[in-house]
Length: 209
Image 1 (cartoon, rainbow, N blue to C red):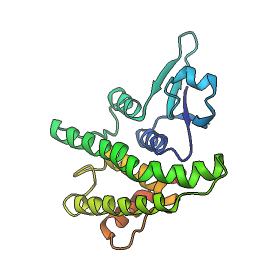
Image 2 (cartoon, one colour):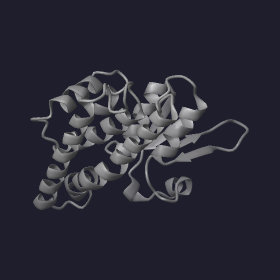
Image 3 (spheres, helix red, strand yellow):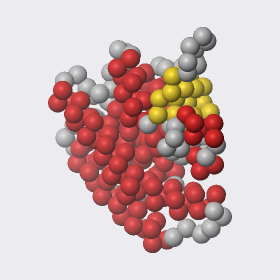
């Protein structure tokens, strides 16, 4: 039985949840607040970060998977159904490039600042957010939406000709930024249309609940 330790507003957790749903992997969700640094959780992942997947098999040692890239690629290699990386080396390289774009660049410039100011400061520190940081994140978000528009004007999906892991990563990060009121969709019709299509998928809707 797989168990996924996640935090609801962690985009990396959302990426894994979306990918698991698309791949049809049954799992139990366990809500984890990483800042609490539970000893049991840090024993599984010394980095203290979500997501973490644990498989408990009777009579054998638990399997622990940490990091969203490692988790998604594990299931891509382990399960033949619904391939998400692409069918050629070139397609897989492009998908990995774009997953890294959202996991690293988008998160650093948009997701992390919004989470720090609009979630962590308010809910955990009980403080006021920094308006300057929020406005800068909004400006960067607009630039990222421009890039998504550019991609979608040239291909059917962010991943390329078919829906794939880059679309999953992008949707996970954008959904958190959108929830935190960090996105202005005006003037970004290709991105807005794509995101509406993503939100209509039964595999994605539970993430927005």
